[in-house]
Image (cartoon, rainbow, N blue to C red; front, side, top):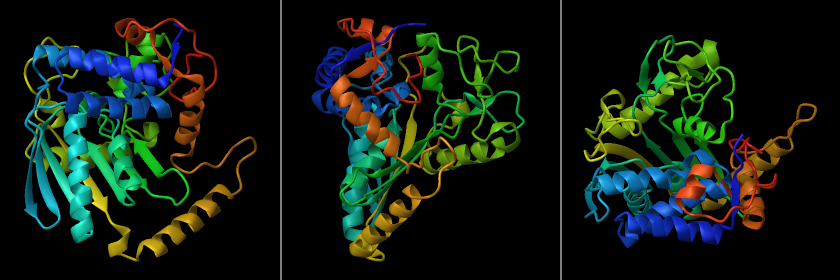
Length: 359
């Protein structure tokens, strides 16, 4: 099992930004990507955190991703718009889109923005969070290349296709749900491969379609829901495809050039995203919304737990990890640490998330 390196957040952020700038990302693109990657690494979503800088370096240098994009916004109605990412880093295009959605929502109550000609954008929750921090309900999704089988299917069809929601909570960090519609995200499989950690049972199959816990032989992921209820995850993956690709005329999951493992890092993948902001002021009113959220969360957290269990609202675990990692440092896997030329400091137990099971 590989030993991770604990890194102070400020140092890690600086190294990642330098790497992206050296690979050809302009200041705005590099800043956006670092913001999204550090969001994920701070809250314990290591699969979508700074480890992705190695991949982004490759696609920036290869030409798949445009490091100096001309991102444009076209308003299509009072509450809708299209952002053309010009093959930018997806983080840059997605932050522009969510800022646009928030602006539309301030005027119209809802802002819905589609993104075209984009690329991988990391953790969807990074963008939903922006809406919540602006006092709105946020939603973000994207489709991605085929790595997940259909219910009772033999081959990959959908991507891991995340659905992320966030909502403001007065005096607290936002309520935050960021979930893949697969059993686990592809990047978690890749992270476990780097760390030499075995996969849980029932999340992946090998080349022959047989269940495996070896991340090196895991070829296809399974949909969320387990053997009997995976139709739920497969259908939810289709929601992401509907909103991100079909609605915008972008690439369908099965038609993507592979994100990793292929030879082509120069052809843009024409990825789509979908982002939504809802302003509570235009519905029951902000005071009503805040009172409802407070009552809901208080009731949820005080609900009886199973013996040895703990009731948490979506986001509670993540914000707890963020506070721990601010003090203890962020664990970085060996491949990424070597790429960023980070000083060696073995990771301890503090701040480790459910994804970071190496320690």
